[in-house]
Image 1: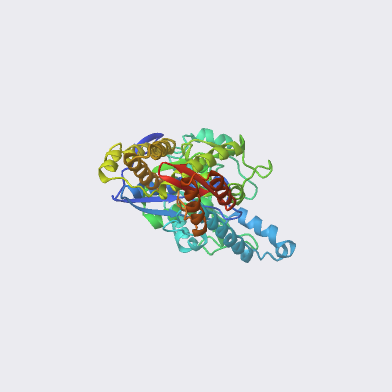
Image 2 (image 1 turned 90 degrees about the vertical axis):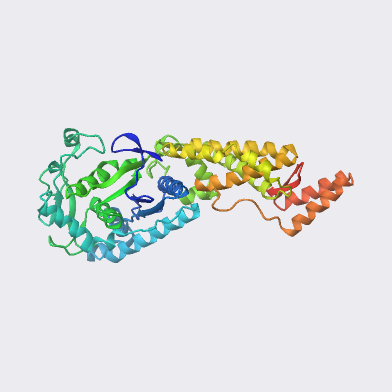
Length: 473
């Protein structure tokens, strides 16, 4: 498999450190609010990558962290607890409650999409002492960091390769850098590894006094703790390239850890041409999207039709198109699922010589080219429908083969995980049989009346050379 490496700005073959194992770390949610549609895109993309590797018999170890201590979590806790706790400073319990509630919301949303949970999901608050404090101490001993009035900062200018991931020079970065009130940096480019405790906020003991870790040290610590000093893939949204991922590299490599070999970043999501923002009124939670478009495959198809590295724009028109695509898949899968005419093995084998799975695999190996892979699925539906319409044993072989390939390949993209096809209820099946008898007797008025009864029960009938097939309305 070939993947674009942000670090080298080129497409490279994935060469695992210890094949067949592949180790992946992805930056997970900061749990201060319900997940939005952008969170869903990133989580889904790395789920597709994970499935693609597993389909090639790689043994994937997938780690995704949870940031459950952060300025935004603390601010949400302040908003929810009101003035009384602001006075007492007792925000710790409130912060835990906020983090637990929104982590549960994130899990529920991803489960609803059928996105696999990570193999390991470390929480930042569980890894502060001794893991993060040990990492910070190591950086101090190496001379890559310094203490300043209870804070600890990373000294950027002492890491010569800083800026390589984001392709920025120190001069460029210096132009936009500044020291915020309350900071004690020696250089505006430096960033916090440890923040001295403030009254009432969550804090942990350390050699530099009570405090909490900076955001960047969390991921450097948790990724190497779970996957080793060197691992195969580090992933996340392109908005994390700078400063978060740039800082992760600096923290790890400043003490001799090779860190991630290949950096994979997904493009950002906009809503009708604008950056998603609550102030613009276009902020879409995942729950809102799934209320409007209930089947998770609508949203997945919308994501898959754009290459993962490209920006993607959400709109009702594009979702309507994805819904139509899903209905095409659903129609074919439901009809084939009920076929009673089956092909002879020789005819089905001949059909498989077209090797749609190989075409699909080639697309996925081409930097996870999901639009091209999806085109193979559309071709399977087109070819399979032709087979249905033939009304022959050979046509049934074509439809059956396309049905099996579509199911297998679709699930490699995370599609159809919520089930396909339908179980026709006995009362509906009885009406279908009654209608068939009326048609054989050329009592078309009765046949139409029975069809209307079936429609009223929420099912549609389609007459094919193989008989009458039923699907949900």
